[in-house]
Amino acid sequence: MTDVTAGSGRHTPPAQPESLTPLLRDRESVMVYDRSHVLGPDALRAILEAARWSPSAGNSQPWGFIVGLRGDDTHAAMVDVLSSANQVWAPSASAIILTLHQVATDEDHELAYSDYAMFDLGQAVAHITVQARSMGLQVRQFGGFDHLAATERFAVPPHWAVTTGIALGLPAGPDDDAEMPEWVRTRARLPRSRLPLEAFVHSGKFGHPADFLTD
Ligand SMILES: Cc1cc2nc3c(=O)[nH]c(=O)nc-3n(C[C@H](O)[C@H](O)[C@H](O)COP(=O)(O)O)c2cc1C
Image 1 (cartoon, helix red, strand yellow):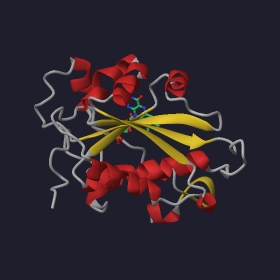
Image 2 (cartoon, rainbow, N blue to C red):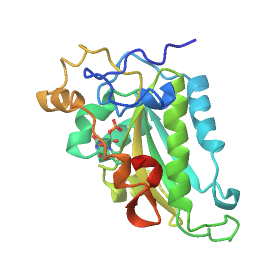
Image 3 (tube, rainbow, N blue to C red):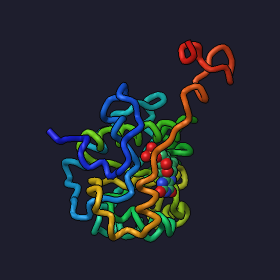
Image 4 (cartoon, helix red, strand yellow):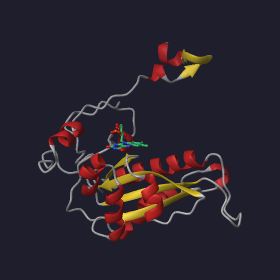
């Protein structure tokens, strides 16, 4: 069994509460990956099955994924369209995946479209992050890339929208980031922060913190 707490890639102690399942407690958006790690077909399939089996409105399954593995042509084309900042760290991951959601019915009206398509894609990606974590891997999602260039490069039809990217891989060890520029090493070591539950869990009316939080 893989030790899913190993190699978190983060130097500061996690602030997440013990009440979280370890799969979520130890998830973080890693910026520095082990460049020698190869993501095999079985692992990749398992990760994409997690998306396949996530829920969606009316079971519409309005998601798509374009997968580039480090060293292949798809991966190289993806790196070309990344923002300059994301080009620094994302190629260290074993895979880069571009996500898509359906934005309209297709020409033959065979593919159903739902208003919840982007929501469903987000949920499918969340499943990917948890499945990856269960396999000792981490992901960092990103929006910083040229969406139009990606749409053209990968011949995405008009009823689909390229949405986000996912860098997926094995986190590098705590001191294996020497090849990264200083700004990446600094950012990767920043403590993680979150709003308190009271800021976004309401009861009675919006803006009123839920009673169970203040009792
Ligand atoms: C939709 C989305 C877009 C993001 N875009 C970027 C990005 O372009 N570059 C980057 O380095 N991180 C990006 N991130 C990662 C976030 O910065 C990160 O999830 C956030 O700081 C919280 O950190 P954590 O995931 O480790 O809890 C993105 C995350 C999401 C979900």
